[in-house]
Amino acid sequence: MPPATVLVVDDEPLIRWSISERLTAAGHDVKEADTAAAALDAAREGVDLVLLDYRLPDADGLAVLTELKRRDPDVVVILLTGHGSVSTAVQAMKDGAFHYLGKPFDIDELAMLVEKGLETTRLRREVQAFRASRSEPYALDRIIGSSPAMVQLKALLKKVAESPGTTVLLTGESGTGKDLAAKVLHYNSPRAAGPFMNITSSALPEHLLESELFGHEHGAFTDARQQKRGLFELADRGTLFLDEIGEMALPLQAKLLRFLEERAFRRVGGSADLRVDVRVVAATNRDLEEEVQKGRFRGDLYYRLKVLPLRLPPLRERAGDIAALARFYIDGFNREFKKRVKGLTPDALHYLEAQPWPGNIRELRNTLERAVLLADGDELTRADVAALPFGEASPVSDGFVLPPEGLRLDDLERDLVAQALARAEGNQTRAGQLLGLNRDQIRYRIEKFGLARPAHN
Image (cartoon, rainbow, N blue to C red; front, side):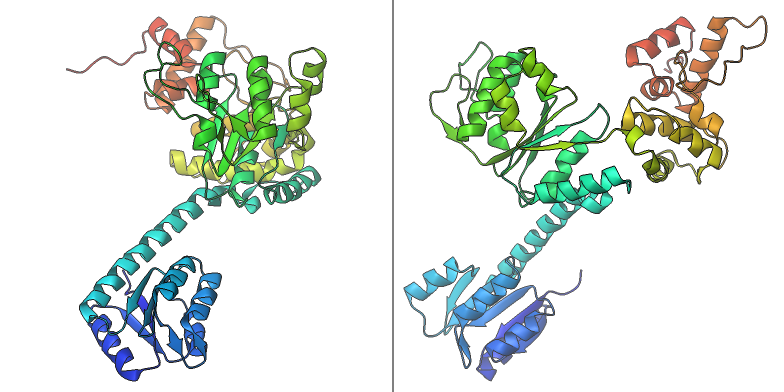
């Protein structure tokens, strides 16, 4: 780890010398400045901590402190003065000083304070690095696609992200990436440092979904043995993503509407209103206008949600992006499966671009995952990407070639399951994914054909 850089700002040479000697002996890199102008100039090169005298020839320390914090809100500054007062100390702390030390000071006390300040600097930078690592995959320039539809979508996402209090409704077919768009909105907004919470409205029964969203009080229902904070509370100063909002029951829709209008809610079984600062991003693959007409969705909630509606285009409307998407997924699956697939043959790319992709990006991703995993060559051919799980019909049929005479359907199915297990190195879940089967379906076939590995003692 490189030595920490400490800037000592004082107009008295002896004080600068004594502090520099002590901190250099402790292994720190020390810079010196005797004026406010020199201090601000030295700080431009980056420092980990500033020891700042209150009285300087060309400015007072509070003015320098304000400018340092303006440039970098996380910089740690310790104010030193022999002319201090309680009011100066209070003002210094309000302006963001880490600590305040009067002159004459004990050099050991100062050295200890510097170490505490540097520890704070280290922790703040770790937090910054963690936040950056979380948000980096969701940067706007990481969204793949240069088709007109995607260029327009990225421009809208950027504008909407900069309005962190406005409710957003994401619409589009299943598999178009609404969950990714919600994270892009969060991590490119002023709320990025706050939590991102998400829930799928169709994943839980109504009473459990209400408790997950709004929390509950002790004794609110039979199993409520203790108070629970809901996602609205946990998402305070952040974003709550409500996926499949069209599946939410009407009574819960009324409670959500109240929150959107009043920014207040009550826990289940509670009597006190709670207020939080949460941005709501909702998503649906349903036509909510049609749902309103059929009485399955509240009209007032629909119009409250669609303050900023964003439609994610289906893959068939952006076929020109398939080459870039394929490169991205192939690179990722190469790392995951330790393969060296270089890309697609022209015929394979043409085939992919001609498909309707009813499952959109999710379907394309699954197709490429299977193709990379099973591929033997260094390029994916049309045969690789056109190969579909057993029993699934091809969207563009070139005719099905029957196996040799005498081969039964069971034999073919057994062989496919055995190949999938071999490719997946015995992992049943992965083998099922390769064949488009869920866990129960693949286990049934493994038992049916006696393909389970014998247990070892």
